[in-house]
Length: 194
Ligand SMILES: Cc1cc2nc3c(=O)[nH]c(=O)nc-3n(C[C@H](O)[C@H](O)[C@H](O)COP(=O)(O)O)c2cc1C
Image (tube, rainbow, N blue to C red):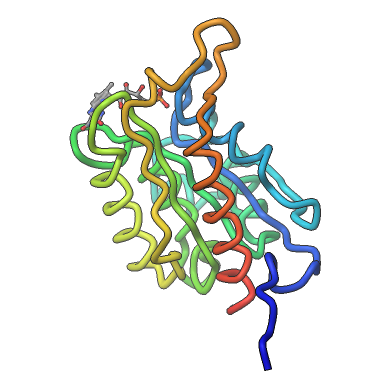
């Protein structure tokens, strides 16, 4: 019997939290996230968590009480069936704000927001590497915290400045959009595994 391929496993509601690893207003990674959001299916309930007010990880502070911005971040992750992190690359690694946020989210281990949760990674750079090294580091950190990071398809956007419309300021690229559709479909079934 031939079974026709279905686009999404089920139309069941999935809660997805998205995080942008760049704090700047005109961030290319923000533009990529905006492009991705436009391709998210209707059955995804999407929430964005922001890293702007996350303080530096400090165990003494944590002992007294988890800061409000961190509580918000952890709850947004814990509500989610899956989390998508869209991050730049700095010096062949992930930005400090991303590592810092993941450290807070993983702590204390008994209340980690990362453990046994589905994650997917994406990133954009004006350079040629597509943020591969940054994503490799994020994957390493998430794996240490026993998160389930989607192995593929990878979402690596190189030369992003050239693909951004100077008038609208938006990332506009048919090839990227087509790839985002595949990525979103794959993440939908990845989340269903757990
Ligand atoms: C400190 C620093 C280091 C950087 N290192 C890299 C790098 O290793 N690889 C890369 O592709 N881009 C690198 N860049 C360029 C960033 O990709 C670029 O600034 C990008 O626009 C940042 O992402 P955003 O636009 O989302 O803020 C670096 C930028 C900064 C500020």
